[in-house]
Amino acid sequence: MEIAEVERLIKISKEHPLLPETYIPWDAQREHTEIYLPEILNSVQGLPVYESLTPQQKLDLGRHEAVQVMYSYGWGEGLFCVFMSRYMLSLQPADTEYRFLLRELIEEYRHQEMFAQAVQQLDGQPLPPSALHNIIGKFTTKYLPADYLFMGSLAIEMVTDTYGNYSRRDKQVYTVLRKVFELHNIEEGRHIVFTKGLLERFTAEAGYLKRTAYSFVVLFNIYFLRTMYVKEEIFDRIGILNSDAVYKQAFINYKQKFAKNCLQNIVEFVQSWGGYNTLTRWAWRWLLDAKV
Image 1 (cartoon, helix red, strand yellow):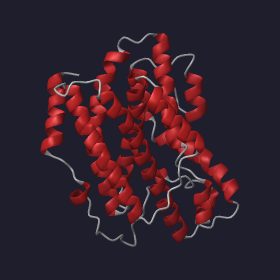
Image 2 (spheres, one colour; image 1 turned 180 degrees about the vertical axis):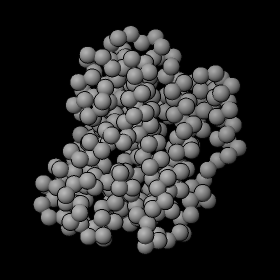
Image 3 (cartoon, helix red, strand yellow; image 1 turned 90 degrees about the vertical axis):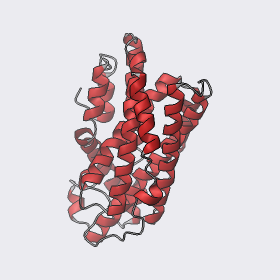
Image 4 (cartoon, one colour; image 1 turned 90 degrees about the horizontal axis):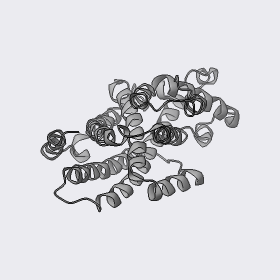
């Protein structure tokens, strides 16, 4: 990416900061017709059991799943901030890359506070990551090389960008949440542009094995995040009978909906640097139902 373009992104960040304290109408009460999560992102919508739920159960399901999504975003951004802080120690303060990442770090911390407040606003009780999520998240943050971590973070950012688009554009969604995702989309848009540009210098020189490794990093990061959304405990909370059986159905249903509605930009990105080959296609099809 050209230095002038990065400088432009830095300037926008400095001159047009979006502060959650003032950008989000936190005092806005939910209208009785508003929901918390677009149905296209709901794990149960589309299954027969969904039609048997009461309006209140449907509303509560969306609330709990929206809370889980925002909590997962904040948790993932926290891990990335740990990596970025360490990575930036190797850069000079006058470097354009350093100055952009500093702005990104500031914005990511604001996002974490924003998501935490939104979770509180929804009276949320997010379910923490599993032991496996914790181990993998902390291990990769500490030991993976920088290019792999930037690749993984970009994958997460692109998924959250897609989620944000669905939520902020759906006029049925609670106003506070639409503004939360709107703010997040605006700032993450800059982060995505920068990270894509940064990674070009790695993907341009990557051979077959390196592109294969990058592809798996993107794949596992998306799978890692997606498996934090659908939780059996949520079905227990809203009073769904046979929650274990419903969870299994919802997990498969959500996998299919996610593949259909949330993967296109990711697939195109990986395709742009030749990340699909004999070694990777089967895994993308198996884990994510991706059409590659």
